[in-house]
Image (cartoon, rainbow, N blue to C red; front, side, top):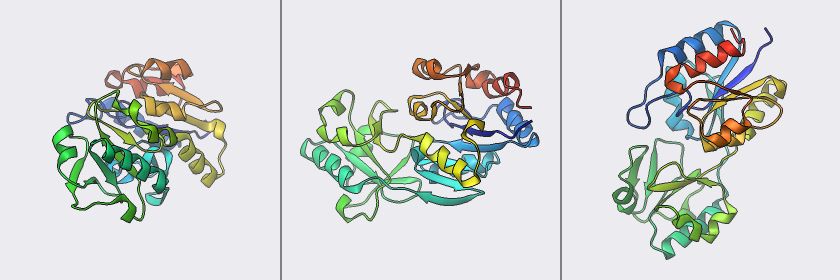
Length: 257
């Protein structure tokens, strides 16, 4: 079989159970083993920061990853690059949040922590997705780079923020939304270009809104059974749910091993 370059989202695709109760189905682990034995190239494609996704990468035996919503690339276990956000645009978002009393936090480095200027973000969100540390006097203008920003509010408050019109962002939690890259296809193309591989040999697996960016024409798109309807509409194949052997069943249907 011709070698395929297969990219998997993490949450809801490789991993079942949701935040705080996540697990990797045994059938998924078996599918990954069989894909490797068949000689395919495997990679993670996640919106998570590289630091937050690297444990999953290692646990599942991956050496390659598109992270940070498409702006981070890890190849053969080595972080190649994470492209930061446009700092001036992020500052405008934070300035507007400050003027409206909306709590915020930043990710100014590649760690498992985000930084906030006070306790308001943590008190508002009580978040379990990522740890928040208070850095008194935190000023985005003094950050060399900014990878992500986190804005604590309930929908539809974000509709009142004019500065959001100039940045990429997404909401995955009720209590806050992310200002982050949303272009997984960009990172996938960077990986393919690194190896000089044909885009038509790409296969992507996803389930959520931030996977829409990698469900593009020119390669094979697989939606999990638990995927949102918009993703299923773009998919070339719809498999079963993540916790119902979705990865394994798709690999069988696509004759990947």
